[in-house]
Image (tube, rainbow, N blue to C red; front, side):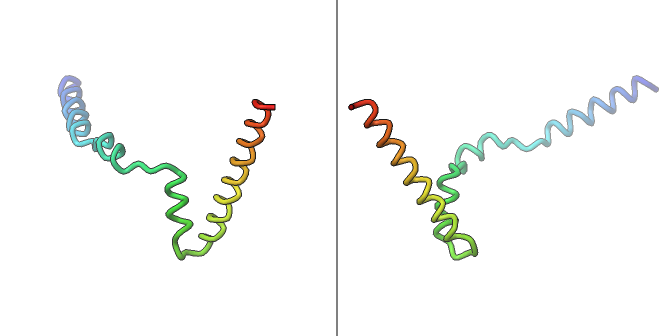
Length: 76
């Protein structure tokens, strides 16, 4: 009886493993960065889109300011 249970368990495991979905091929073609997703959201008409756009603008300004500070410290 236990050999039969082991064989059935093994066959069931193999069947489930064979039916598993392979996501590796799909994710490489449809992956977007968080910046791209936010940009799409910011351009939409849904509520809160203006806040996303404003947050992206503020983040860009902060990044540009930090870059200017870093550059000025390297070239006094």
